[in-house]
Each structure stands twice: as structure tokens, then as C-alpha cells.
Length: 300
Image 1 (tube, one colour):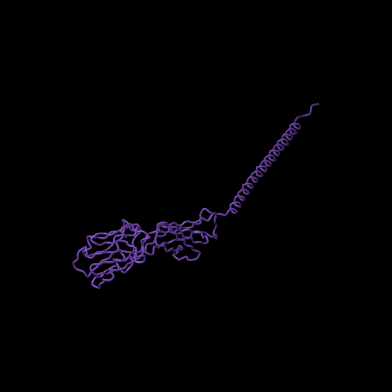
Image 2 (cartoon, helix red, strand yellow; image 1 turned 135 degrees about the vertical axis):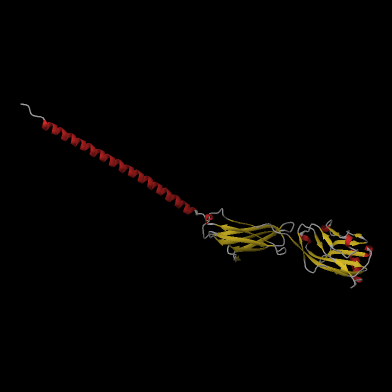
């Protein structure tokens, strides 16, 4: 029935009635309500009963919203638009045939045609694009691994819930773009929103900064995150740890051995000094005894 009605409208199309829609694509944000603007001119006074307004998808010709005989006619409305569309009925007399679309989804993206008939007929088509901002990106790297300067390190940048696909750019601390050894993967969920994951492989250099920048091409907004690899992150490999531990043990052993030797030398020195003193005392006692014997007179 609707197809026959549209065919009849085409047959009486007139240049007197003009429909106006945006020439540039309309960007609608995911999850929000949006208005697809459509207005008409070229008619002065008319009854609402003489007005017909049809909104449909330009490619599939599926009905988005219909109005005629002074009320909404939603029998042929596509199921995915059920309870999500309405006209500004109080402004129809002033030429406003705009469509209110609630809770915009990714699947709503596409070209919409607005048909208006008031005795004569005219139409216009417009493109609606859907956009959703990405979450703030997060950059991580394999700091849990035992790495040393000169090793290859994979830096990972992730963000979620955006549409359309993000533009990803890696930069170093000086702001220079890094394009080598970069991979990007973007996967859509059941709602059509993308999760983005980008991996940059670099050669580990202490005190280096890397920045991941995400741009939504429709919203024009940017979000970024960075990571700085300091000298403390570049830990010693296992071999160096064992060598260091071995040297420490050897040094400790040498110190203990040195202490034992020193103690023995000190003991030997003390014993020699004690023996010398005892020998000296014995010599002095012997001399004293001889002196006493020499001083005693002989009896007759």
C-alpha cells in the first residue's frame, strides 16, 4: 500500500513544493537522541489532513516513520525503529517535517529520505553518521619480564567503546611519529562499538618515553596515554645476578680467611713475646743468684 501511495506521489510531483534537508552528513552520538532535519516550503495554507510525511531508508526503502490523515501511520514501520521515532506534529503547519530518532544505534547509520506531499510532492535525502567516543587509552609494557637494555619490548595501547574505527598514532618523547613495527587491530562488539589494540615494538632504552594517541575521525576528539621506561625498569638478567652473588660469597670468604690468619698471627706473636719475657726473667733470676753467691764470704 505504501509503495502505491509513493508512486502516486511521484506522479504529481511539483516544483512549487520544496523539501530542504542538510547537505552535509549529520553526526549523531551513540546512545543519544538526534533530530534529522527536514523542512518544506512553497505552500501557504493547508489542512493537516492534506499533508503526508514519509521517512524511509534510501537504500532498502524500509519505512522509518509515516504520517498522513492527521496521524502517525506505523503499520509498515521497520521493527528496529519501533517506539523510537516521532515527528514534531505541532510544527507541521509551519513546514517542519523533521524526525526525532531516540537512542541512536550504530545500525541506524545510513542515508534517510524525507518525502512530503501537500497536493504536490517533493523529497530530499540526507546522510546520518554515528559516532561514539573511545575510552581513555591505556599503555602497558612487559615490565614483569627480566629485561636489559637492548632487548625488544612490546608496548600495548588499548581503548574501548568507540565508533567508527580509531586513528592510532605512536610518538616518542620528542614528538616524532613512530610508524615502524606497529600493529593495530579493532574488533566490534554486538552493539557495533570497537575495541582497539595497538602494539609498538621498540628496543629497550632506559629513560625513554612513548605516547599512544587515539583520534575519533568523526568527533575530532583526541585521547592519549604515555609510558616512561626508566633505568630502574631495566633489571639485571639471571646470569648477572648469579655472578654478583658469587662474587659476594667469595669476598665474604676472603674476609673470614683473612680474619682467621690475622688472629693466628696475633696469637703466635703474643706467645713469642711471652716466651721472650719468661726467658728474660729466668736470665735475670740466674744473674741475681750468681751475684748473691759471689757476695757471700767463704768460711774457714
